[in-house]
Amino acid sequence: MDQFTVVRGLVAPLDRANVDTDAIIPKQFLKSIKRTGFGPNLFDEWRYLDRGEPGMDNSIRPLNPDFALNQPRFKGASVLLARKNFGCGSSREHAPWALADYGFRAVIAPSYADIFFNNCFKNGLLPVRLSESEVDRLFHEVAAFPGFELIVDLPRQVVTTTSGSVSFGFEVDPFRKDCLINGWDDIGLVLRHADRIREYEARRMHEQPWLGKSLGA
Image 1 (cartoon, rainbow, N blue to C red):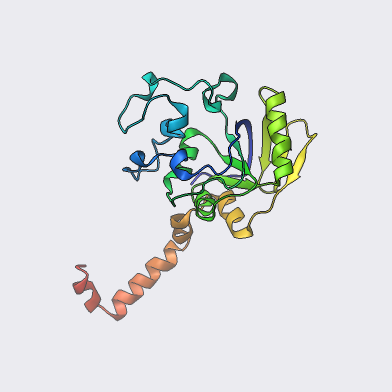
Image 2 (cartoon, helix red, strand yellow):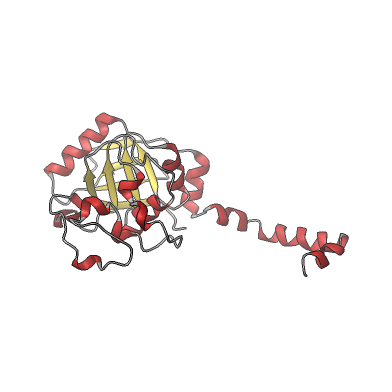
């Protein structure tokens, strides 16, 4: 998992509340569990004017010009600005996979669905919770200033404009913060103890050698 410390990035606005996971990545794209390749189908039903299916050449599909991610000013955005209850609906881990594969490193919203919120941390994506008034302020800034960027500083737990004129603090669980900063997903956390695991397995096989036969060792 990629480490997350400080990210400076272009902000893309998604001015909708209650965006569910089926909108983030529609169900027909859930057949793969590779974690990659979902970016082109992020928000598929809103980005394109036709119905997307796995294996389609997205480069020739008709785009919805009114959708923010299709507008040139938001190309290359790495911070997504959203409204309350982002990531509601079914508990598909493909949703943060699609956001990360597209290029987003952080999402800023007033609130999130619990399962989506937890899945973000496990996949290197930082979900920042700010108040509705703070999110409103950022939406106004994005609309007023083309090329609007934010600095998301996880160690200091602040979101700041590049000019420093606006700065908002946010809360994050210390354990999740530590995992993101170090790039530890669930597997990475286990592998930190690889030497102790190997020592345990060697000791167990020495003390109970019959287990090796039952396990085919």
